[in-house]
Length: 177
Image 1 (cartoon, helix red, strand yellow):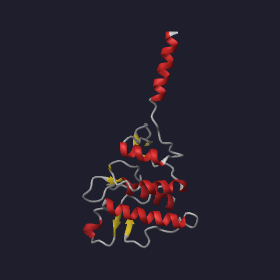
Image 2: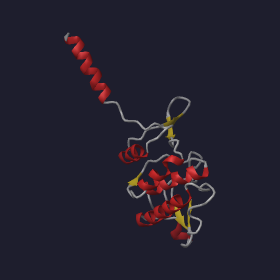
Image 3: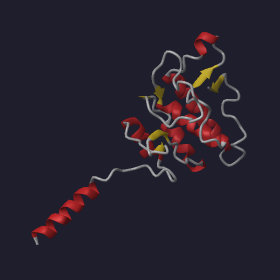
Image 4: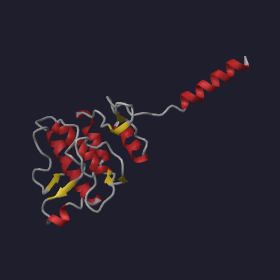
């Protein structure tokens, strides 16, 4: 009887300690954002010897766009995010060693819109209205919030229409790098 009780308690313990993983094929945006912020998101593309290569982007779809836009108000600084595996550049703007979570989430929306999973080679925006030296330094959190509103207006006006072929940034000086 003691052994049976011990096994039941042990099973419950290990079951309750199971990690709350993001389902890469049916992702929950809130869970994904929390794991990115906590540094616990760990879905890696694996190499031939099962070594971790790069973080995989979950298979976000049209149904995730509003949540991604809503969470993009978070301008926390992060260092890890699923990056475009074809980019060989440093993923941060010049003079910055971090990414901005909200900017990365909008980049993810752009990846859904363009059907490439990634918004561009790197997950940050540049302002083409600035001179060459300033434009590659990246945006500030307040500017990300402005872009969030641009994406929100785009989505709310087009979600039932031709949203894929309309660039949200078309009438701005911002582009994805």
